[in-house]
Image: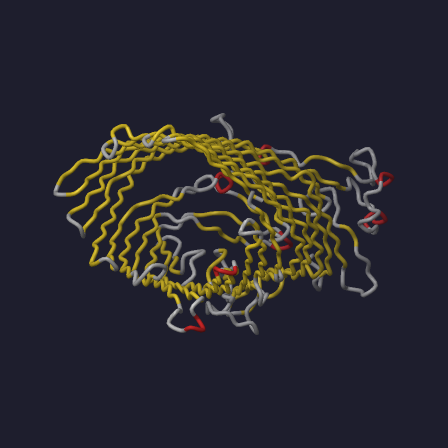
Length: 605
């Protein structure tokens, strides 16, 4: 639901827009999760093989409000606020087999129950002031952002059955060792506070027969994180087979708990201690830029300049003697260049070059380690990873035959200095670890095409618009010390998007059919004898139907996502062939999320 207002007199104007949204989704996801010991020569043996059934109830609701006041034609201020809460209440049921160092794999069943809530709040205020109309313009902005993640009580319980005899029962995996995998209760609070502000000044003069603009600007961003995880474990100081035989509905009854003494054979409860489960983080970004916008005649325009960024970061602890302490400060000069040649009123040729940086997330740098039930592995950051510096080069041809139509063709090249990748380190019995690394460099280059055309050359198709875009990308990661020469993690060799839209404006009816497909890509990088884990390619079709109602004040929308509901496979290649062979390649993971159907009603006041 949304609404707005405007008022004013003369040059003074005041207006606002407000909205509320609410969405509730019940979802079922079917997946598999497997791990393998790779022996060599294309052979492997299973270490675990699970089937996961996940049931979740997801709620997303939010609000926004924007107001703006224009003092006169040369001065305006605006304020905007967005608030969202995304919550998921879920249960995962696991069955399958696992290596427990017996003659054959043990049967396994497990449970994970949890609730997660993410809160996002952003408020910003900005202003625009023509100090000298058409000559000197000043812009400023400031904002505050809150990102909050809350896990109040995540619970896990695991059972194994020795298959040496068909009559052996399932027993709970509880021992005198505190575990995140079974008998675990996990609480987490994460809060990010982001403060930013900046200003830009643009000065325009007449030179070379055209308008020339010089811009200078500054931005400050301060980000603070408070992270506190509290993992607890239910354990047995001394074994008690009778308790471990009880099912999940009875095993944690009050009568099964003792005093926690080392001689007790009743259940005990304790925190998994250590400062690795909490950390603080802070980053301060100071950035300034100088930009020139030069117009040479009616056909040629060049925008060029440079940005200086000083990035100061602390992760872990403020105490230098604390092993978690990790402090870095990096200064980058990032040039940029964009030239446009206007061949005629319908055709442009663009050439651009720039440098950008991608910095590791706090969680990728923190030593915090947690067990991920869905991956059946731990995930841990690496304090030594560095930021990635990217050099970009792009050449593009653009043709605009008429309003609403476009044809573009381009080539591009990217060089990555120290890209950040996620590494899979295999360990038996769920002891695998995912962490991060910086290979030496990577390169990617390719071509991209886009086409949008109204089909009104035919009376029967006059309300249809066809659009398609696609890219072919060749990428390689290279590191002489690590003997790497393979595709870049997360980079598909191709991507295709196609849509067909029907718009009957006089009836307020629109319908869109969308098709998307990306090529196979490395999802997780392998290590030692573990081959890389690839995500397979699959087609995705979506459909959307919208009808305007109540004199265009109301809107009824039907969305159907992932119509084909094809299974997504993550596989490994013991034979070194990157293509998927369902008959021989082992699946590390698979996911089938189902077709999502939603109906949305909106009303504008």
